[in-house]
Length: 151
Image 1 (cartoon, rainbow, N blue to C red):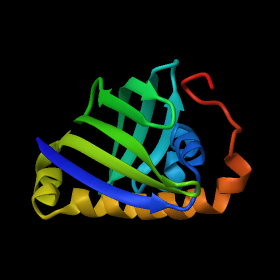
Image 2 (image 1 turned 120 degrees about the horizontal axis):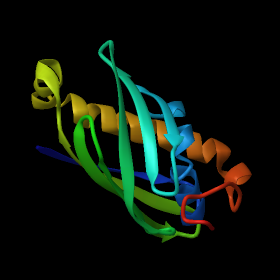
Image 3 (image 1 turned 180 degrees about the vertical axis):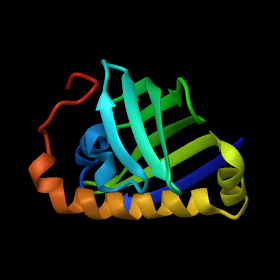
Image 4 (image 1 turned 90 degrees about the vertical axis):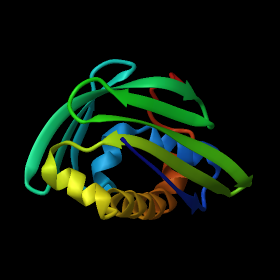
């Protein structure tokens, strides 16, 4: 099991960062290898990923939601992983988003990639793309949209 922690500062208020992150269906727009995320119910998401030519589907359960603070999850099947995303207000317009993942890569290629830092590199890239995505859309998403916490 590997643990990876990465952070990015985004120039949007904390509510905007949290609101965008909890729009899980938009993950394919900034997460490399994620083809689709569908909500099955209030706490369960179905993921479809395609990495190194291998397509996988798995379900994950949201285990904790504290609005504007944190979201945590764990996989129910497929690749074993769990994680937490925390949101820290730096000032009125800047938020630090920190992702901590615990993952047990499946298959020889994924384990080899993990040893060479591919998972860390992918997470860094995903966070850079999230920064661009949320900062570009920030004004349009503030206070709007369906969130899994009912707010």
